[in-house]
Length: 518
Image 1 (cartoon, helix red, strand yellow):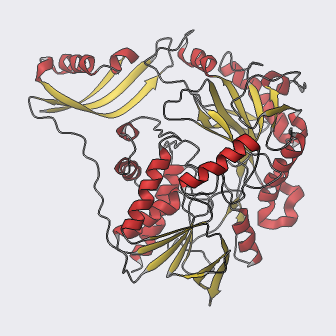
Image 2 (image 1 turned 90 degrees about the vertical axis):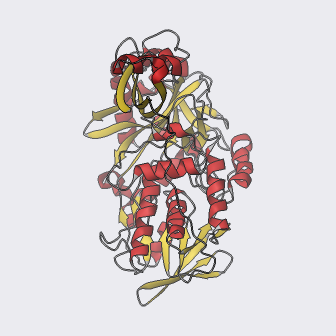
Image 3 (image 1 turned 180 degrees about the horizontal axis):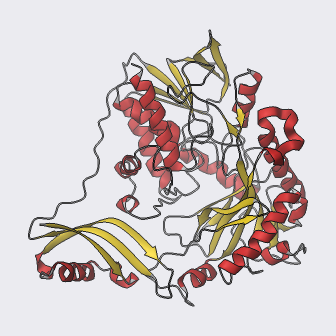
């Protein structure tokens, strides 16, 4: 017999299968030896009270053989001789999942990635962190797997109506992710493990006869009679296909410029911009778990904050417990920061983006750029951060309370940002409205989380690549561009996703539409 149960356990109890079995036995009034096993369907932590609890929803097998969790199976076809070929520009989650979906339908994907494979990409990331050298084609944003590959693989999404989340998570497990991503409330893979999963996806695409081409930066779209027929790469190659999925990510500014120059319709899209704040992890643990020292059975604590200041939404973004602040610039003379965590989240710092919403009124000084006003606004802030920082990729920074009080920090605390931080007045980096809203938001956050508002925390600029500042429109039914037939804007860069899972779902959605056209 199978029973679905909900249990509320102490962290130490939830880490012990024998104790879980005892609770199951009590719940169904049977002996523990009658339980052959259990499968966890959902796991979350409730830390609202002084005692944190682990909440489990599970299926118990009683007086019958235990059956392991069923992982969705996938049927990938040999597409080496397929007549239909689809060009996919960008090998981030949208592009990869679109390619695999096409292969399931017997269609050959041709993936064009401007950057390098995950292994070669590491050398360029090392050069950024150790020497402050940016390769505009290979960095934290560009390369196999996209921006998420080295930004730790957070899999939580609120986009529940955009596709089959369970299918996306199961496919990640199929390619090597651990099963807890299927049931944890906030699933996370880790930067140390995600590259192996991305490599396995690429190998499957190649084994099935798909094409995967690196260092193939697309520089032109060949359009005839309002229909895209091929793309041109920087090495002058022309690649033909029956359709083009444009899955270039939120930082492919050259693609946005190309579309505008070719008079292909694009639109301004609201986005977010701000800073990344870093606290000692033990401080966040003590605040969230109401204790001096975190219980060994609890994960490093995270937080989620939101506030309205002067009619502006301020919110935490990409919170990384036990994480590291990383340089995410994609060009010379700019400072962009992001955050990531390894799978164990065992670094001594906790960092999070704290950003505010940017709308068309905020970018009025750049209105001459039309739909690209937000992009140039974003770029100007990043370049100012570089100019005010300490040279190379050293980021301007300020202690948190000093920032709120407009006081230059005499010294800075230790920080995980490897290129280094430079004491600066961030009001000289950020637009006045952004700086003022953030100062008030930090004070408000300190009232919500006692201990958060402290000079032991450091504020680092600038967190500016939360999402695309441009939307590439598409028809609601056909999903192709309203002007250009067979051009399918897709994923985060086109303005239809925000994160790995939602981008993957959008890639599958576009692929399904292409499949349905025959």
